[in-house]
Image (cartoon, rainbow, N blue to C red):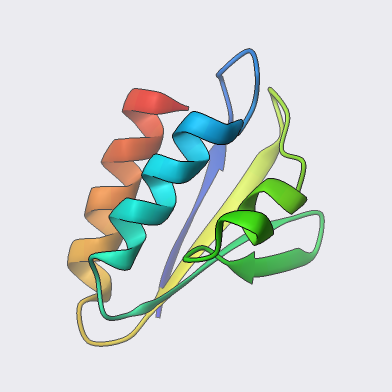
Length: 85
């Protein structure tokens, strides 16, 4: 299992467009991916779960990866977060 923490820098937080792109990216991997904020973790492959966290600017999220391709998924999602959120 791998994980990393990330502080959201986008002024609008995780809103519809980047949430949709994140879900699409995560679905391309076999491993399970969770995103958590304030102790609540959701499946990162489900857009309503991601949107339901209500992540705003300056919130810290934890992304965790568990499965066969977790290393590649972690690297790709980390890059995505830095470029988009």
